[in-house]
Amino acid sequence: MTKEELALETIDRLKREYPDAGCTLDYDQAWKLLVSVRLAAQCTDARVNVVVEKLYEKYPTVDALAEASPEEIEEIVRPCGLGKSKARDISACMRILKEQYGGKVPDDFNALLKLPGVGRKSANLIMGDVFGKPAIVTDTHCIRLCNRIGLVDNIKEPKKVEMALWKIIPPEEGSDFCHRLVYHGRDVCTARTKPYCDRCCLEDICGKNGI
Image (cartoon, rainbow, N blue to C red; front, side):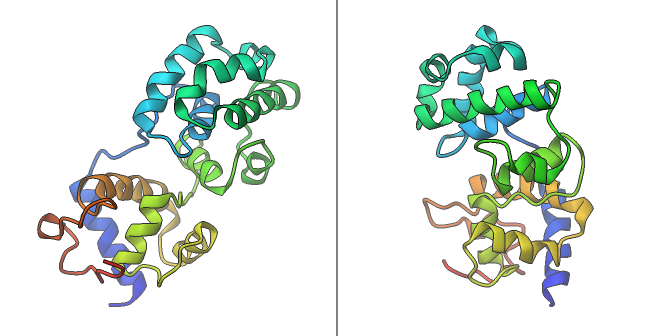
């Protein structure tokens, strides 16, 4: 089986296993996903979803958050860890949205990368989830599972994994595929325990690398 064939079969099986998989960060506006994805670094999505409720209650718009000081933001987001740097990035990011983009999140990948605290993973998430454009989000689940399955060969650097996957994943499938890898990585192909291969829908096609 070629990598392209393995990719298509993996996509198909995960689609059946997790038909409704989507982003696990709660948001109803693009700028809120931008904030949440910054807070999610080294923090669980579940905790982020709780913390941002307080943040948006006090600062319900881009303009309001842009006017808040980094110290005021840090006071609320501290439970997510790395509070000082996250608050600084969020503050700077919201000011740029307010001053340069009329309070809107740009739908251009390179423009997103120029925002404070936004890397390729975050930019891809926003491009895929908010704007419905081709995207591959190489988070820790994606990197671990793609190496184990054999879609990539011992590549750990996020950008290199992303570039390798672009070659074998149909563009329109990338965003949902990565969301399904998160679900599968949490429930079955786990990082902190031995993977539950006996109940994995990919068991017979998985390369089981790095286990």
